[in-house]
Length: 208
Length: 74
Image (cartoon, rainbow over all chains, first blue to last red; front, side, top):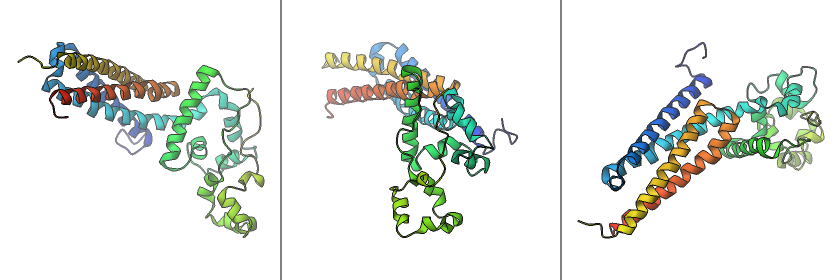
């Protein structure tokens, strides 16, 4: 629990409330459905049963599923560092002596929290959905097919993710190549990757 | 008054019971996900839990459709 108490706007507290609410609604929904199932079959098709099922089937579970997604998204953002598979990459990111881009972003606090998720998910709702599908796929791979010896990014890292923060920054605009008439359109379109000139984001290594 | 279409009533009851059991399965997974919010439970919630609940909703809509047909609304 945070120092500000249960009613603070702290993200963990909000998630705790959402989680508790989802749990209560889920149990209430289950109670309604079990009540309907426990009655004699002909009663299940009567108007009171239909109203109960409207609440037990639609209203309560919909909110439970919504709360589940909110909690799941929050936990997913933190889950990258919970898996031992990613230990070498996380260790490099947290290493003050490392010169990789991930380490530079981490030690300079350019991203305050959820560092992996911030760069490896697209921005906006579509990015969240893609990250969710990707996260489920990673967990299923982990338990079903096993982790591959060499971990590679599925698609080339989009320059738009870097440009989302950097493109209008004063420091970025001071670099001649970034505003060069020939190079700028290529950078903005993603034809020219940021990593053509800048250091690798992570060390290239196989899983130990 | 007797039901004019007992076959449809029997189908409605079967579908409704199946929908209830699937919904309970979906809710059970989501409750477990709230209690143990680990990545595996989230994956199960997203695939098994929401899948079972989605199917339960479809069956429930099927029951509503049969009911409306029986009442000659549709």
